[in-house]
Image (tube, rainbow, N blue to C red; front, side, top):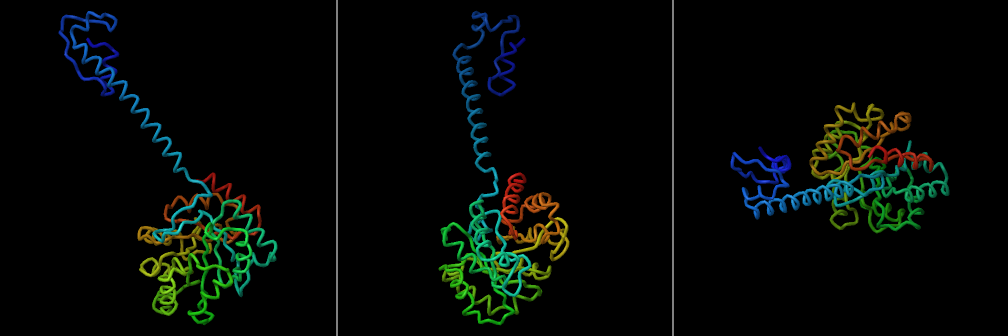
Length: 324
């Protein structure tokens, strides 16, 4: 009958089976019993068991360290698809109810809005979502006076319905933002399924600026499901800003129709940015649920939220820390 210690080692795969003569039983304290086994083999096996157990502990410790190192947080910088751009998980959307070059944020007044942008940066936000239609460029420019340009990702959008020449529009943006380059430029509020045929002049212009590295990535901000589907299949599109929340509020369609399109984009290596996470304020009482839904999809790289107070920024970062 085997000693229990030997059986235990054999159960862990750390002790090779040794056949003992049947008539004799022994205890581990009976040194004479070791004559029935090769003493040297036993010692080698015991040493091997010790080393193996030590190795298992080292592997477990390494796995714990690895898990800790990839633990997600609200201030992480994350990759945006295959664009080579990194940005924070949360962006500051500057265009709540934005139109006619103004928004809820610009209506706060210059000093208050700029202070809010700086508070967001101090809280870990490294992504600013602007647009010509919001009139927010000059506010972001002022905030950047005390923020290193290479530490933030700036997105802006062309309101192509104005009819302004594509050749001059991005140059004007750069002057308004006081920057040599713009990280992401999107065609704003595309709604037609054939937008990629109607807006070729803008697309060609942006492709040229991208080749010169004046713009790093291009894409669309979508406000209709057909336009979203076209963006998913367009090789020109690097980044898409899409409306997503668990209730379908202010979205291009119900979640069960929008989510598969976001999945297609993500799998194609496009950067996926989410907006209307809180349904433009209609889902304010289910903020944590909305954040859990969006991050649980696994298809959204970062989200843009239209903050209007420091309390909203701090609350969102707190909730996101809990969700992640």
